[in-house]
Image (cartoon, rainbow, N blue to C red; front, side, top):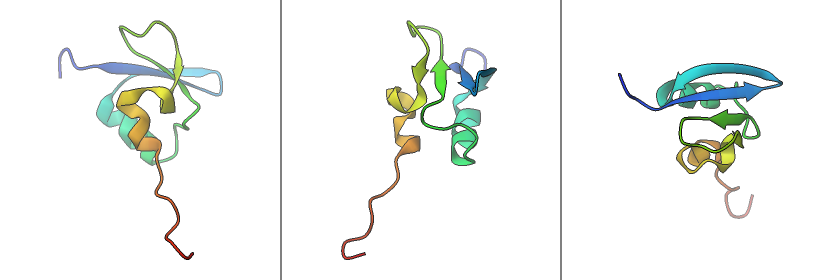
Length: 69
C-alpha cells in the first residue's frame, strides 16, 4: 500500500528492505529475523533490536511452559 510503514532489517551485518509489516511478520515467523536483529523505519532515531520495538515485540513472544510440565 502506498504510504504504508516499511522497515529495514540488518541480520548478520547484511541490510535488507524495505519490508512491509506483513513481510516482516512472515520472516519473523519463519525464523529468518531473530529478536536481536536490528530494525529501522522512518521516525526512529537509530537502529534498534527488533524485539525492543513495541510494534514488533509481540511477534517474538513464546508462551511459557504449561503448569506441571
